[in-house]
Amino acid sequence: MKKTSPWLYIPSLYFLEGMPYIIINTVSVVFYGALGYSNEQIAFWTGWLYLPWILKMFWSPFIDGHSTKRRWLIGMQMGMAFMFLLIALSHFYNAFTHAQAIATQPFLILSLSGFALAAFVSASLDIATDGYYLLALTPSQQGYFVGIRTICYRFAMIFGGGLLISATGTLAEHLPPYQNWTALFVFLSVLFLAVGLWHKFILPIPEIDKPACCATANKNVWADAFKTYFTQKNIIYILLFILLYRFGEALLEKMVPLFLLKPIDEGALGMSMQQYGLIKGTLGLGAIIAGNLAGGWLLGKFGFKKCIWPFAIALVLPNFFYVYLAAIKPGLVTVATLITIENFGYGLAMMALTVFIMYVSQGAYKTSHYAISTGIMALGMMVPSMLSGKLQNALGYETFFWVTAFISLVTFAIVPLAKHIQAIDEAEQTFRK
Image (cartoon, rainbow, N blue to C red; front, side):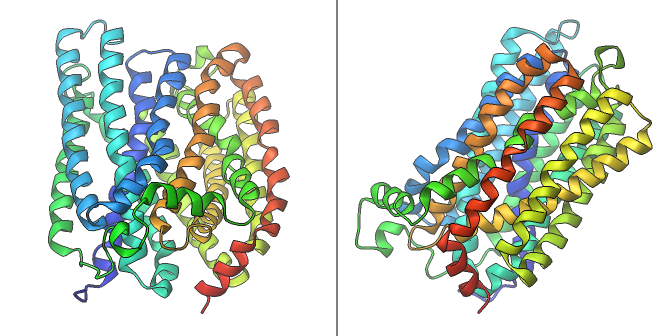
């Protein structure tokens, strides 16, 4: 393998991995909200977009067993460029023909189909990128760059969920109605094409980057990948931890952007897209990066099992902030402060979950194991997020946030399970060598 510094490709790989996720699962919520769809419609239908990240565990062995991770990730990056171009064209057509009735049922179906296809491509990109990371870097490099890759992934969320939303709001003042969204998706298409071409040129070719069926004697890649994952020790504890650790966040994810952006007379805060981009997308996600940095340092110094309790507290307790925001509706400075604190805690907590999944994804099928773990995590996000719109519609924002905050306490019930998972101790010993 040619000697290429990971600094030349790890940041851009994980920036491009994070960008589709934030666009498909969060920016789509803002997009449909701006076009006039109801909270219940938005939460339910965009909740389905998690499905590819759940199902990817079933086709990850195919990616493991056919071609190389390098070829897969470059191909999927080009595929994302094509998917965003399709969404841009469909929106351009709908905005051009239905500018006075943009929230049409045919467009909802057409655009959701585009997002769904993009989600399948993005989930495949996740599999290939994470697999390539585990193959191209040595174990010591993997430990060193775990914080870097997480920061770059989060920076994609700042860029996509903050700066691009602000820019899209500003473009609305200068373009024909709704064409600001067309411009956004065209830009994303060009971005993926350009960075994908860079990766084709710069990415090293690891000698061990081979189909799993060629690297092992077992030709039944699917069966062996699932068997080795679901028969590992403490698998019940592992599954419960991955499914429930982010349960409160799953209920909040779709509703928080709508709560911040919807009009005050609907019980929301009535922010502009520019304000939302600054507070939630930029300051908030900047706090996530700070939390990732602090979390990575603390995990490296004290280990997973010593950090998991304070990190879980930092994840759960700020959920009560939204009760205050819905009840009092304070000024922007207070809103920005509370959201920044909440996101710093989330950054800490997500570093713990990232390390946890990496620790339980080892062996010959580590790429498939990682995909299975993140697929289970996506299932834990999908179902609550789909129900959140109906729940909020029935309860109103303030009561909804009360219920969500108390439900999120389930995280404290599953944290003790981590102390019984043997894979955590074994992996920490390996990564600290």
